[in-house]
Image (cartoon, rainbow, N blue to C red):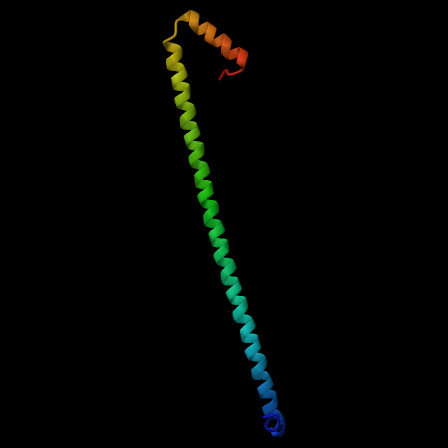
Length: 101
């Protein structure tokens, strides 16, 4: 086979080398494109995960706000049902513990 290649005209040799170079270049481009697609897929997965985490944090924030409001209502309702003497004692205990709202 080498003798056949050796006996070919120079233009054919250049053409064969060019074809081989193009094949190698095409393989490199295909591998790069595959890697870029994988990076894009990974980026989208991270983006989706971050959006889910942001939504989760927003839900927690809303739940905490609702819980705080319910707790405030419970404290108000409890305070309304307590006699004035007990109320002052409770307020004094809350102030001592630093739990005032």
